[in-house]
Amino acid sequence: MSVNYAAGLSPYADKGVCGLPEIFDGPEKLKTKVETLAQLIKDSEYLVVHTGAGISTAAGIPDFRGPKGVWTLEEKGETPHFDTTFEDARPSLTHLALLGLQRAGYLKYLISQNVDGLHVRSGFPRDMLSELHGNMFVEECEKCGRQYVREKVIGVMGLKPTGRYCDVVRSRGLRACRGKLISTILDWEDALPDKDLNKAEDASRRADLALTLGTSMQIKPSGDLPLLTKRKGGKVAIVNLQPTKHDKHAHLRIHGYVDEVMTQLMELLGLDVPKWEGPTICESSTASIESTTDVKPTKTETAKEKVKKDLIKEERKREAPSIIEDGSAKEETVSVKRERAESPFDTPVLEEHRPPPWLIAFFSCSTNYVLCFPPF
Image (cartoon, rainbow, N blue to C red; front, top):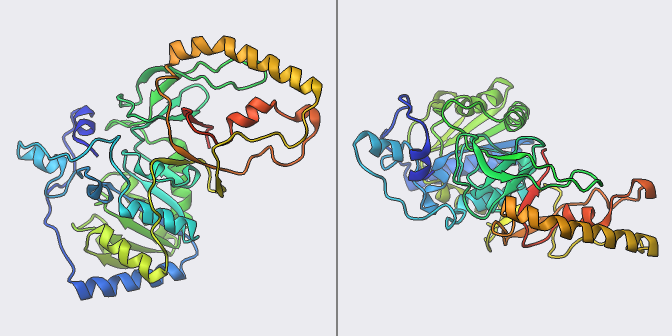
């Protein structure tokens, strides 16, 4: 996605075909094709979208193999122009339109090769998203699998340790996990994350329509996932300015800017493109409301529970300095909106099975926390 990202990768000779000429459909032809796409989506029962670097160029982040892509210019000995930083980049219209399609019930799963984090920062539900090549803002505990979404880029690639440790309390014993946190960004020879890849493959096989946006599909295995839909009898629709590896398998090929295509598509579907009001992290597709307060216990707190709660608070305070010192949690605080998912603790449970209130609050929605997600 960025010059710094590309420069941080190991040397690699085969970067695919770069600099292919761009093709543009005329206005009437583009309109007709988008109308066809809209009907395909209306008829679809399980739409899966695959995204590549082309959807982020409007956000100021260069692609890789376009006429002004990072590797295209690298072959010429030139340096690409970079309009923004990862931290300052805003989701493009396409990112937000995909969020709108998901909220409307059309889009069932999203598969991305991008590492810029814009899908997550747009508020797209993380349990409906596979980021196959990682996320510049996410680090993961190699011990328990918890993920942390940071405000700034991690600064480390190739699944290497970031120098921080997992501070998640896994049980009532109040012992933090303390596993090493590692980058989620892949280098050339790194294997794709099993969880994300498995979910992406399952969704691709289940899909009756695969829509690819801004990707030439040259990188395996990510680029071959739409073929799983084709083999199961589904259709493939491709939106890209350059020829792609799988054009011959496509039911529909659209040559146009993805933002323009998505603008027309949303109008035809009668949907508004959601507005972006800053980074919003959505943990789950079951999220329905936004919250800036901790979840309250579902029943009145007894005197015994209050004493126990106070003891827990005091013990957590005593542990806090070491967490801040080792993990820089205070410095890594993220001020973002977070959409509240339905809490697993909202339904009645036996008293002896009820978790302490601080644990309920921790996994609910709040602001000014380093966001931590359990492994899906």
